[in-house]
Image (cartoon, rainbow, N blue to C red; front, side, top):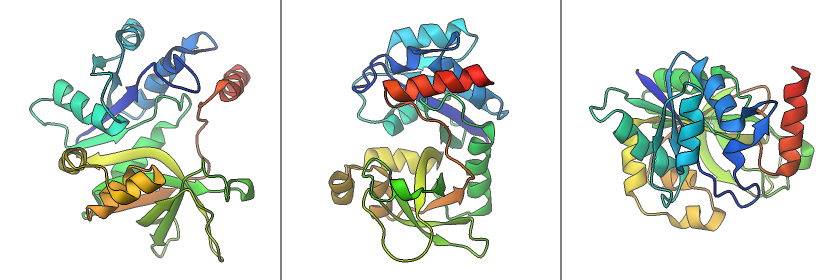
Length: 242
């Protein structure tokens, strides 16, 4: 496999405007996310929806490409960026690392690649962590329903939901880092949003309704994610403690 990590980023975030450019101890958040991803050993590029993001990333020595700000999702932005960065299709595997996870371990992208290598039927790989009791009923926390293998640490995704899951067994908090076989991402982006996707507002349900296989690997803890001003202050405090 020949992975390409693409980090989608745009300035028009409703809860935290200009989020990718937010300063975290002297570095813009998107630059921190890029530098973390580079430690994976894979090629990394930022798929920017705005020229300001391209300028910041390239000024830091990174690779970035400008994409249409009107693209409907990060998945679409990754597909378009991959075609611009690699028109010959040498990269057969695309990894979506979130630009608002400035401290994500490079091992997370590697885990997605390993999962696709282990599971030939896997179209999309992703990650999960154990949810806390406080997250069980929180609709902002996406839960993954998995058919676990014998290890209890990997499994095929049966469903994703914002609802509370009942009964005994682990509740998995979905971590929004994805690995795609390139052909699968092209098929996914060419399809219309599905009924379940619209109902739950979760685009990964489109892939399941299309008959694609999504596999997930468990990680010890979800990386810090910055969604609002409070999260940004927590990220700054974390960076100051390093």
